[in-house]
Image (cartoon, rainbow, N blue to C red; front, side, top):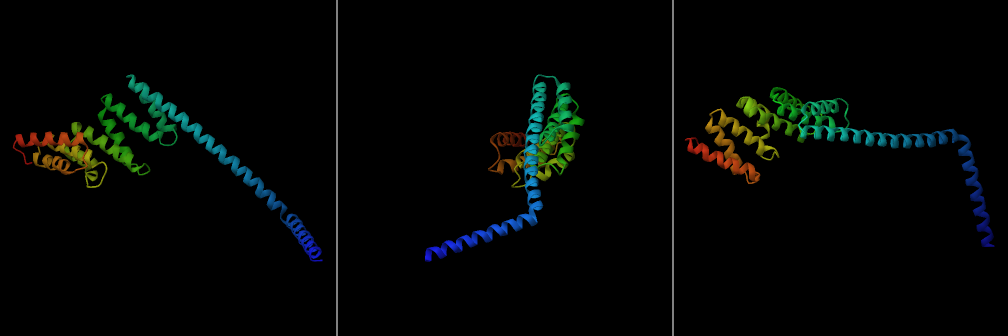
Length: 223
């Protein structure tokens, strides 16, 4: 008898659930169908977007590599045109990378002013990652060592030459070299001394700093 009651109760519950589902379907079928269609459309759209991103990024990457090859082969004009086209129509990180490489090509061609301007433009672009902006500052500064004043170099990279900044070693070297060229041996000794005192300075930069400190001392500068 107990089994019969259980069976009866289960059948009643099944009927109630069935009736409820039918009522819900009748009342909300358009909403349910619309939601299902929207899910399918969104999924298809996302897949299409991902495919477009991958395809576009691949095209930009291929164009970037082609321009690099032209630069390595000494075809500066073609490389510059390629990089500048990627700046305008490239995808992802390729436009700013192309801008940096175009500036390098300009420097190699002897157009130092245009190269410095291009690097400075990247450095001032707040939409770019900080590491790229810092790299652009350093590139501009190293060009300014030979084609600008100490003040010009300082304006680009002195903000990087602080403890804890990953770019401080190169920034200090640029500042020290610029000060040395300007005849300010005390300031040059200060920057190269900061490199020598920093236990995290890369070996190459630390070695050059030591040589410069010896040279400054030989010239009667402060060390």
